[in-house]
Image (cartoon, rainbow, N blue to C red):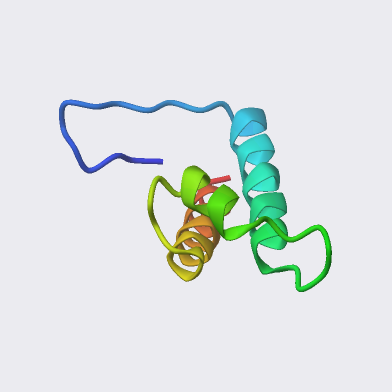
Length: 71
């Protein structure tokens, strides 16, 4: 996984990348679930540092796909 900012470097092991992808999948499910386990808007805002729910879902899906493509 590359980071665009040249001053920052991120390295993940394959197992770490799989674990992070799994975690992001679960967060996505909790954001989208229409039932009682859905994260509240306040919780989503905290996780997304102010991003709205739809933006956070798109970001988690994109990052998960990028991680999995590198494995």
